[in-house]
Image 1 (cartoon, rainbow, N blue to C red):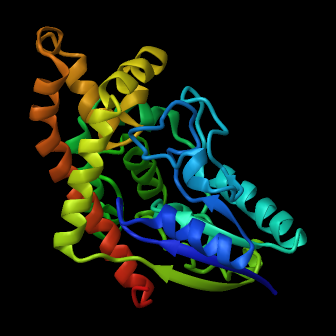
Image 2 (cartoon, one colour; image 1 turned 90 degrees about the vertical axis):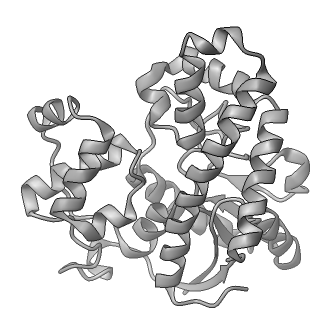
Length: 290
């Protein structure tokens, strides 16, 4: 049975540096479990690890797509299984690290039951605001709503497609034994990083201040020019919130410091809400923090 190490934790908790330490100590290679770090050019907003910070440890599934392209959970599962097998064959330990818990679930428990796309329904749902989409998911399937980012339109619409077909979004194990779905069996070791509320809030604020110093605003401008507003909104909180501001007429008359002063508290509050949802997922794992 193949052995894998999974390192999970909320945003800004120090997962990447812990993964490098474990890789150096245990002859490991890192597989990124991050739905945004797969995209080239999304460096500052995703706090992508630098080559220096990698300290020579091989990292996989970073910078493998352009932001104009989509990368699904199914794509990730295919790539991750292949990499786990290749890394193990080299005599190294696969170390899976990241904060995209949907990817962890898809890899370890299987993808949700297949429901075909419904173009007509999607067209209707696209006319709704993001808040209306989330309200519909919450009304129809409160459990699934609690697992979703309320601002991720793509996943909200997909959830409503599945709900329209099945009545709810099934748990990944519902009526589908893992082995029967072709999911490999692994010996899984967990390292859960779960800082206190006070420490995590401070880490989030420090991370954001550093991102603005590294010119997050200019990165968002460049990505927005490439992909447009609709796609930008799908790339996470930082890109959506900064993108909304830089697209406004007010932004043109303000300097970067003034923009940062306005956006930092907004982003901090939103990231803390996201971190709380990640913490709730970690509690469901049932593993003690390491």
